Amino acid sequence: MVKTIGTHSGHFHCDEALAVSMLKHTKEFQGANLVRTRDPAKLEECDIVVDVGGVYDPAKHRYDHHQRGFTETFSDEYQTKLSSAGLVYKHFGKEVIMNLLGKSEIDNEVDIIFARTYKGFIESLDANDNGISAYPNNITPLFKESPTSLPSRVAKKNPNWNENLTDPEIDARFVQASDMAGAELNDFVQGLHNAWLPARSLVVDALEKRFDVNASGRVIAVERACPWKEHLMELEKERNLVDDKSILYVLYPESSPDGNWRIQCVPVRPEGFENRKSLPETWRGFRDDELSRISGVDNCIFVHAGGFIGGNKSRQGVYDMARLSLEL
Image (cartoon, rainbow, N blue to C red; front, side, top):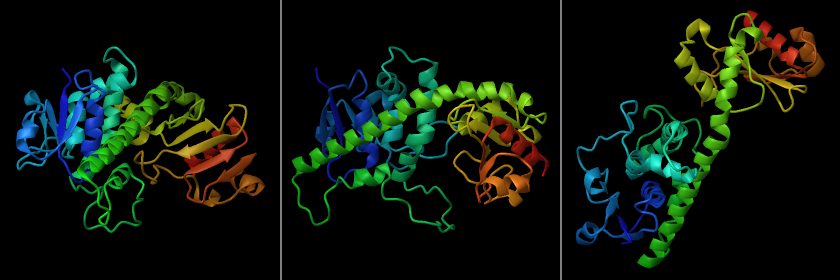
């Protein structure tokens, strides 16, 4: 028998749009019908209900987060209250990821991507729907957030205030929004699987060889440009590389190891711009021969005015830039 997913009618948000899409990537609810209503009698007939009903009860497949006293989070590690997207992800996320990746079982890769996807994709949607700001209320943002975020684009699928649509037409808009949210989740998961996760082994190898790069052990050379920040910080925690053992600079080739190389500062946070140790102030904003003259390192290409990244025409050149940066 075909199952039925229930959610509320009317104005919709990103959390239930994504929740419905995720459910359709599970064995139980693949190909399920969708009912959008606020009629309790009709919702009672649904096999699973998300974002409406005032009940959170996984045993009964009821996943609402609006009721008084609801405090569920993804795990003890998080403080962000879950939305319907987070609730569905918490209970069905590993199966969803397994199916998106075409796997037949939940393995270690699925477990790693499951955790990373909540932190990097789902949590922000939970916060958005629950009205949780990314910064304290007493801080004025330095700029206005872009209207191109996933919640913003889902919201735009709703009718404009001066646009009259029938309920079936609004339901069709919801399906479009749900498909869009699901496609973005799939793209995120595929990116983790195909690019982000494989980079971990490169960072592991670089950490093991760090004393070959610099005697301090605080510089690593990754043999290919790759997403290294989060892997590095997780591995540092695992290996207790903290305080005066933490990595300050990461070196990597722009393309070929025999070509140009970059030196990049390790940030305090993966998503931040504050560095653990910036490149020397006297180098910043200079290029080419002038930079080589100031730094004393041959074949320099540039150091960004912000002091977070620089370049040289050779591997040895960035090794020298890192060595001098540690000393200055």
